[in-house]
Structure formats: structure tokens, C-alpha cells
Image (cartoon, rainbow, N blue to C red; front, side, top):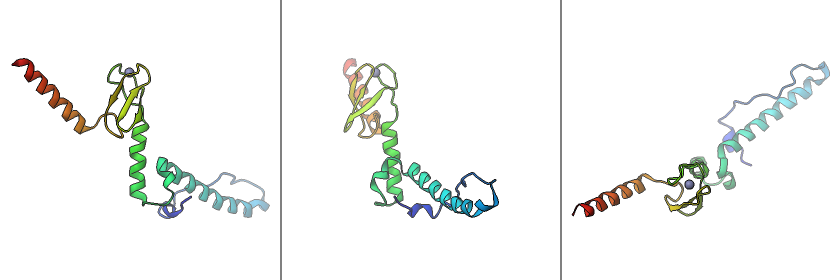
Length: 133
Ligand SMILES: [Zn+2]
């Protein structure tokens, strides 16, 4: 587990247990230190997300971007056929609705990309021109 990112983040909730017998104050202080450590560890885990598998490698920014993209990838996506939020990624650029079974191609990491939209529009326009002739 990495503790490289914990230096810049000093915010941490302290473990509860403020009230107690006098004899436990030393233990409480110890627990506060422990609690702070555990909190930053938990926070780091939440921040790295799916990129946690890289450990401390590749740098924070690259890891964060991977986590963001993979979070998007695993989100619920709306089906272009039935409209249900049931589209899952089946492989590189392959998406399928688990409700109606509609399978289609899209972006590698998301069902639809801006570039893909442009291409679809161009194809529709070209087909419409053909019909006019
Ligand atoms: Zn569907």
C-alpha cells in the first residue's frame, strides 16, 4: 500500500473515544495516531479506485486518469435500442445491453465517443443524399 500521497493530505477524522478514565489517555493518544493513519489509508484507497492494482507505479496523475476512465467504463450506460441502463462492455469497443440483448460497437472505453457521433452523422447525411438522387 502506498503512503506517498498521504503527505499532502493531513485532514483525517480522529477515532472516537474522547471520554474515558484517566488511565486510558495514553492509549487514546495512541489510538488517535492509529486512527489518523487508518483514515488516510482508507482515503487513498478510495481515491486510487480501480488503478489501485498499479500500486505506487506510474505516478498519481496517470493512475487517477486510468481510474476515472475505468469508472466511466463500468458505469451504467443507456441502451440505444430499449433505453434501459443495462449496457455493459463485452470487449474492446463492444457493448451489449443485458436487457434486450442489443449488441453494438462503440468507443473502446465508453459506448459512445464524440468522434463516433460525428461519423454516424456523416453516414446518415451521405445516405440521405443518396435517397435524394
Ligand atoms: Zn437494450
